Image (cartoon, rainbow, N blue to C red; front, side):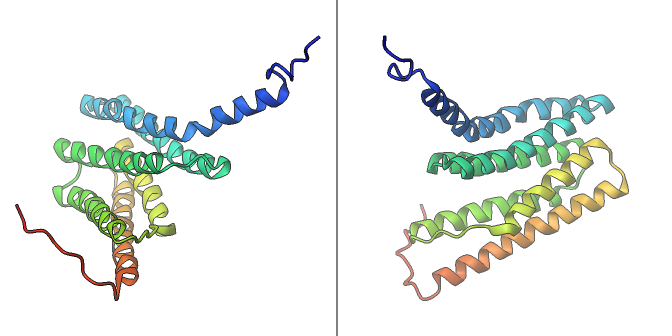
Length: 203
């Protein structure tokens, strides 16, 4: 009689299947964060107390998935270049869509949205430029703290617009700008002494 292990259906095969499923979770969680954007925006535009609080809870869940996908990717070594790209873009899409909607609702002034979104565009540009020079610079712990405080501050503002939540949003903005400055200094240090590349003429 052929053993289950010989047919590839024994405990070891099951463990491999389970590990493979868990290893695919980071990309699934990133996809969830992107797909949840329209639902959060829809709840905000409904602009009722219950819908706002539901949006805040959903936004916090999205923030938790941001932490989980990084932990799982490191634990199972399942990170990929495409997965990292979608993770970075997904985070920025969530925050950008949220602050733009808040400006439309009159919850925050436009300059706050410019601060949040401008930092992300600037860092993405710096990352692309540095990558073209063969330089990779991590945003470090400050970048992770920036993302955490963005989720906390914006979720608090969605829940209720009181002075404490405004203080959290402003602290998140300070962390956002500080992490952008840190990234600029880090990239500049890595690129120091390298010859300037040929820059194409503007279109």
